[in-house]
Every structure is written in structure tokens, then in C-alpha cells.
Length: 230
Image (cartoon, rainbow, N blue to C red):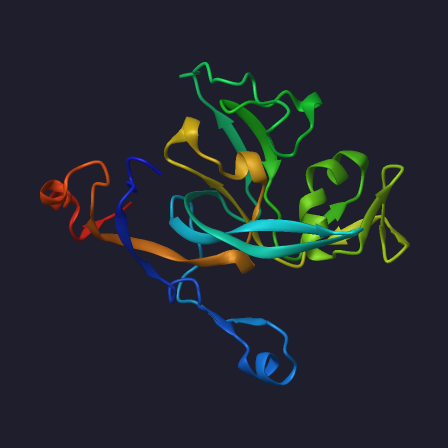
């Protein structure tokens, strides 16, 4: 997120804005199961909001896929539920490692998408219907697995608990996130959509900042104290 958020910044995050995520203590104490409850927030996520969230990390155990709350990240919202994301930039740079066709979400080399030339890609919205044609299965496989870990793809068709499905109704809202450091940001272009369940809160301001590259007597960045971010 450089230069908006710098290494060494300590930021204030509002959890009330989008609604706090609360651990269900009853489940934890009596059933030994970690479950979260999402409270209603005072606002909805908007384009350009800077958000702290848990990286939607998946783990594989045999044939099963589990999503966990990964490392907290800070990125800017570029696409909200129901949007179609399209990136067109003319300031193309030569990036070490090549054209990124193999590394970019949704990992389909036939699309020939790059960091500067990406999309269009629809951002899933709760309640919307996805027709499970082969192209959609490729582009939204991560979402389908997140919403139901029993999803299996066989011969360009989807099966839930062994039952063939022609369509899917999204259970959650998703977001497309970008970093301000456009060419050096591991964001939605690489790992896909952010589920609403992984949002922690909105970044409000930089409380104070310490420069890790300076000696102790020069560490404080006074120009960033109590600085609002936008």
C-alpha cells in the first residue's frame, strides 16, 4: 500500500464501520468449536475504502479443502459485489519474472490477462445466480469451494456431495482488492476475491509511524502522526 500505508505505520481500524466479527463463546466453551458471529455495521464497503482483512487462505487435508483466516493484510477496495472489474493502464512496466499469465487469478492462460490488462471479471454478489458453464467453473472455482467444500469438478461439470448442479446461488458478498503499490502488490489479481467474512475493519488514520531504516533518534515520522488516510 506504499505510499498510502508505509512500513512502520501504526493504523487505527474501525471494526464498527462494517460490523465486528465476534467469537461465539457458547460454541467454543460447550462444543469446543470455533464459530464467528457477524454484527451489523453502520456502513457498507465502498470503492476506494482501505480495508484490513484476513488473507483467505486455503489448506488441503486429503481430498478436503478448508479455508482459514490467514495473515492480516491491508488493501484498497477496487470492486464491490455486482461490479465487473476491468483494469487498463498505459504505464506498462517490465516486471521481473515475465508476463504473469500463469500467476494471475483465475489462472487461465488462455485469457492472456496481465497486471495492466486485466478483466473484465464479475465480482460475486450474495443471491446472484451463476450458470455453471465451463468458463464460469474456471473463473469461480475458488468461490465455489469456499461456499461448499464438497464441490467437485468432473468433465467440466460441478457436483455437490455427488449431485450434479447446473447453477449456483452465491451465499456471500465478495470484493476485489488492489494495493496502491500497483506493480508490487500481492492482491486480488493473484489470489482472487475477498469474502465478506474475512473483513476485519476500515483503516481510519495513521496514529504514528516509525521508520525501520533510521536510527532511534530519527525513527519517528512526525509528518504521519494522526494522519487520515484516503
